[in-house]
Image (cartoon, rainbow, N blue to C red; front, side, top):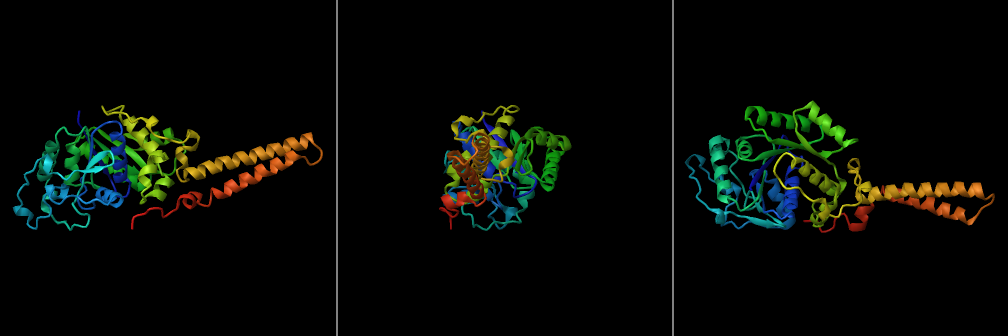
Length: 359
């Protein structure tokens, strides 16, 4: 069964392309054949993301999304449809899944005034043809669209099984997402629309926040992904793609997708395949701290409390200084040192904050 999923957002910068890529890899690890399409032709954020980490360039003899839509043509009015088959498409392998990039080279100049991209009929026809050409080679097709709404984004949504909107946890992000959801639901009668709140910073109670978001708007929220400092610190390094699967961010992505699977016939993603730290270190509200910082803060409190209780026990049991007082002092000092280290960006010091970054 083929599942086509359009991923959209009301505004840019909400982390849509990164979430699409990570979700695609997770579904591939469940044994599914996954294709990610970068339909954001002009900004091409997902393509830039993959070029940045993999340093790949598409074979220019093959067709990317921009070439399929023919926006390299100087005279768009006389443009002829491109005839192609599946073997002509510039599929690239990205870890466990395939990607159809937006452009052959991320620096290619394009015709931003192409009139056809404002033509709903043209966009709809081209997307239908692309999906038909791909056929049943993939079980999941994730389409990463540009932020906002235009004819191309709308055609993508109309030709998908369901739409996933990504919004940031602020008033602007929520309002632009609400505008997008309302347009798709009430103007275009698209029913299967789900929202994920990304980069959430003010999480106190997950269920209460989710209920508040759904109540004050017409969202159908399936997940809230917290802001994660480790994602921010490692972004742009080679180790990013190795460590992301152990982060608070990725665990929330899995939770969001599995919540969505209760409404759609999609496979669940298994948490057991990943090495998540104990849940005591994975509180959604702690995303502003790295895992090392969270561990150090917890252990520092534990050492200080143990040292304090040992000291009280010593004073109640012995009238003079005893060896147990030394244990108490060491425990308290250890806790204080751990607390200080948790505020000094120790993680960057240990692994190098410029480790293997792309020039």
